[in-house]
Length: 458
Ligand code: UDX
Ligand code: ADP
Image 1 (tube, rainbow, N blue to C red):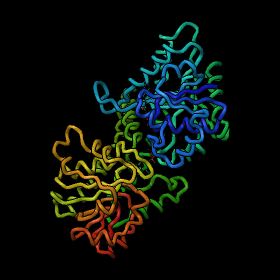
Image 2: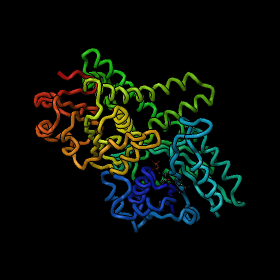
Image 3: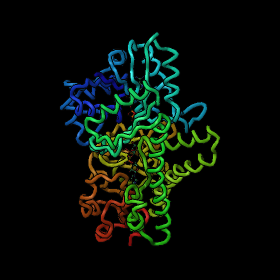
C-alpha cells in the first residue's frame, strides 16, 4: 500500500512519520509545494520542533518515509491521499476574519482529480468546516477521469504541539468519518486497518462524515472554552483575593469537571483554537443560529481581553508608563516545547507594549529572531519595531530591564538565577508571571514586585 500526504506542516509531517514508523510495509510520501520546507524535512534540522520527532524521522526516512515536492507523481501512485494543507481564517470577502479559507483544499481536490488514474481514498486531515467533504466529492466527481472512483473520509487530527509524538503514539481516540455506503464502509475499514497496527480498536471511533468533521471543531471549542472560563475567573480572583490555581485545583477535583485545561494564563494561542471557534461561530450563523454563534464567539472575546488585560497590568504597575522602559519578555512560542508562534499571546503583548513605547527585549529558547520580528512586525507596526530587540539568553534579555514578563512556560525559566537577574535590573524590579510558573514567594524574598495571573502576590 502507498500513502501520500499533501502538506508537510505541523500536522502532516509528524502524523505521517508515525504511520511510517508503525507500518514499515506501507510507503509514505509527504509532499508539499514549499520546496524549502521539504528540504528542511530532508535535512538534519527538521522544520518542526517536537520532542522525539527527530528519532522517528531518522528511523523511517529513506526506508518507507519520503519527503518531496513531486505532488502530482505522489498522487498518481498513492492508494490513500491525506490532505493536510492549511485552512487559515479568510482575510478577504465573505466571512473575512471568521470563515475558513478553503482555496488550498479546493486546489488539492482539483489536482487529485486531474492526476488520479485509479481509485483513491481521500482523507481530510486538515481541520475544515462541516460539509467540506461534500465540496471535495463534488469537485472530484466533476473533474475525474471516466471510471475513476473516489471515497472521501474525515480523519481529524487531535495531536497537540509539543506532545505530538506522544499523542500520535497513544491517542485518546482516532476518529474516522465516512459515508455509510458499501464502498464508503470499505474505505473506512482500510483506514481503520492502518491505525489498528498500533492503536487499540476500542479507541478507533467511526462515525458519519459530518459528525467527524464537526467533532474536531467542537473538541477545540470545548478545550478553549475551559481556558477562557478559568481566565475570566482569574480576573475575579485578582479583585477578591482568591487564588485562581487554588480555585482550579478545588473545582478540578470534581470528577465531572476534571483537572485538565484549567491553567489560567495570559491567553491561549496556537493555530487551532481561535481559528476553529471563529469557524464554528461562522457556521452557526450560516445555518441560522446567531445565538449559538454569539455564545462561542464569547470564548475568543474573553481570550482577547485577557491578553490586553495583561499589558494593562504591566503599564499600571510601572507607574502608568512604560515609555522607554526596558521590558524583558521571556518566551514567545504559544506554549512550551514548540517553536510555533501562531496566535501566540506574546505577539499581542509585545505589540501592545511597543505601542506604549516600551523597549521590548524578547528571549525564546526555540523561536528564531526572524520569526519574532516577522510576527511582531506587520503593516500597522510602523516604527514600533525599532524598539524590539531579540536576546540570545534570558539573562541577556533581563539585564538592565525594569520588568520581566513570562509569556511561555518554558521549564528553563523556573531555574533562572533570579538573584543575579534582580541585581542587574532597574529598581523597583517587577516580574509579571503570565503563566504562574515561578516561585512567587522566593521572588518577593529577593526583592521583586510580583504580579501573577489570578492571584494577589503579597
Ligand atoms: C490544540 C488541541 O489541544 C489539539 O487537540 C488540537 O489538535 C489542536 O489544538 P495545541 O494548539 O497544539 O492543541 O495546544 P494546546 O496544548 O491545546 O494549547 C493551546 C493553548 O492553550 C496554548 O497557548 C496553551 O498555553 C493554552 N493553555 C492550555 C492554557 O492557557 N491553559 C491550559 O490549561 C491549557
Ligand atoms: P498545519 O499546522 O495544519 O499542518 P501548515 O501551515 O503547517 O498547517 O502546513 C500546511 C502545508 O500545506 C504548508 O507547508 C503548505 O505549503 C502546504 N500546501 C498548501 N497547499 C498545497 C498544495 N496545493 N500542494 C501542496 N502543498 C500545499
